[in-house]
Amino acid sequence: QTWAFITEEQEGQVQYVYAEEFAKRIDEKTDGAITVEPYEFGGLGTETDQVEQLQNGTAQLAVTSPGFIGNTVKESQIFGLHFLFPDSVEKTHEILTNSEAINEDLVKKYEEIGIEPLAFWTEGGMQWTSDRPIEKPSDFEGFKMRIQGSKLQEESYKRYDADPTSMSWGELYTGLENGTVQGQENPIFFIADASFHEVQDYMTISNHNNYVATTTVNSEWYNGLNDAEKELVDETVEELQGWVFEEQKRQNDEFLSVIEDSEEYPTEVIRLTEEQRAEFQKLAEPARDFYRDEVSTEGGAILDKLEKEIEEATSE
Ligand code: 6CS
Image (cartoon, rainbow, N blue to C red; front, side):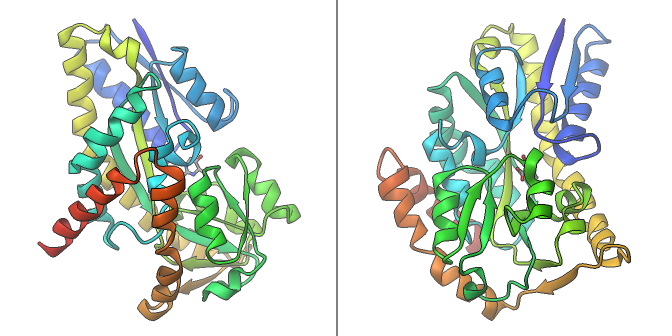
């Protein structure tokens, strides 16, 4: 049998190599009886189309991002909050792996729409790229900021007085080039690999958030697997949780110098101090109430629990 595995990224990029590694391990474990076919982003439509393909069973597996699924699974927008997770990417990955709020309560919300999330993981800290230096919140005034598409992401940028616009990443290079948008956020590996630095003059190392990706499967398909197949999927996803942490780290470390050393496309790299980050953090904080009141369907119960878990994990 063949299982289709959709990703939102292209060859070499973290989500795609994750799907390749998953395929390789399944192939080895089943002696070739099960083939997993990874799909790169581009051929199947937009990220939102891909969510539908997972839901209707065209694909069995997919990496989906909360920024795109947030209109369907409202609570998943929680990952659009700035300065919620600890500064350490490693700690964040640990929380994403172990949190009950995420892996039990939030999972139930996906299940309601026929999607089973098997793992949440980080693709690294989010950084800003822009056509002007971004060092303080007022630098965002009237700034046309690209966001993926969730209400919470929109609110987060409105807190800095920016003007957020939703856009698929397939349109983003051109959008930045012709000025439809003036900036965007992404982990370093993605900024460099998608060549956004070619059409941006500045990159601010802000670590204002983490890019969270989710390994998801079609519920009906997953529940129809026999015990051995289910175990095979679960065990492989579990193995990849540590593997993908190392992979994103390697890529984010390596690609920083691609941006910094490019002579053809010079990009000024701005590193925010703790004081500078605190200015953004102060403005970002009330977006949590927006999540509780306007986004969550249950008054923010998942956020309340997650905040406690983060507090516990960081005070250890
Ligand atoms: O910015 C985006 O929309 C894209 N960024 C990453 C890191 N992966 C895929 C996603 O669609």
